[in-house]
Length: 364
Image (tube, rainbow, N blue to C red):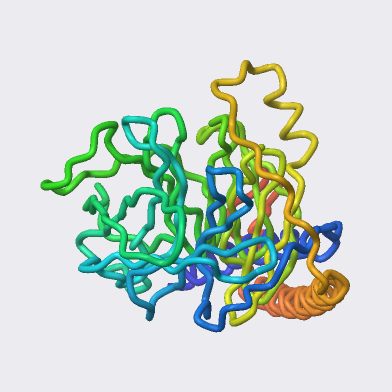
């Protein structure tokens, strides 16, 4: 029992030191310099959970609500006004968490919506809906449903991505206290049978809430509560980069030229910001040949509320920085308690030969 107690204290001490280091790094993270685009004017958009940019080059941004809404999505212009609400009659919306843009086998633009949320991790199947990308006023849109299940049991997920060239779907699990996993769908999807996902990679960031693949297929971006990451392809090394700190980061999508991403948060009248793709990411793919010529959307004109949005971003940043310092102080306190326990129970995990959790640091 004593030895097991020493082992537990040793491992807790290691975890606390690691968390302390991570928290310190976050507390000193460089602030981002986002460009505010607009706020959602439509009060029906209560929890924007996914974002997508129009393939038609008209500056339209698509979004949908989190769980609690019907199977519908919104088209929003560069001023934040809703110009279309599209309903998928007969579809379900248990927990829509993310969306993606792409093309079908004939090259026609389509949108994908991921009914993939599962906070209790008990769903035996999850769904992804595909609809033709609409143009024009509000309407009912036809849809196709693809059913999926994981090879290793249910998972909560909030990230749906689609490769624009292979049309392959990717779903990333959302995990709180461990790294997540990225799964890929079969190359050919069945509309009648359940499609089995396969593991692509582990090591996905904690609390991943959204993701996207660039229009040229070269870059992947992931959004978390604490920031964002980019990688060359879905298997590349992840690199952190800052995004606006809002109430709760929820959606991320590439602009059609692939040079920026847009990000948003949950909440009524939440803001949408544009963040340039890091120079290192652009440099990493600049030597690779372009696979296609993406449609370039004109940059949306700044809204009259830009100064207010900048002020909100700065306020959110200061609040988040304060919160991180609180977390840091708590971690320091926990570390102090663990050090006292380690001394009391002779459970210091580093001995003369290095890290040895459960082995006494002193011998009597």
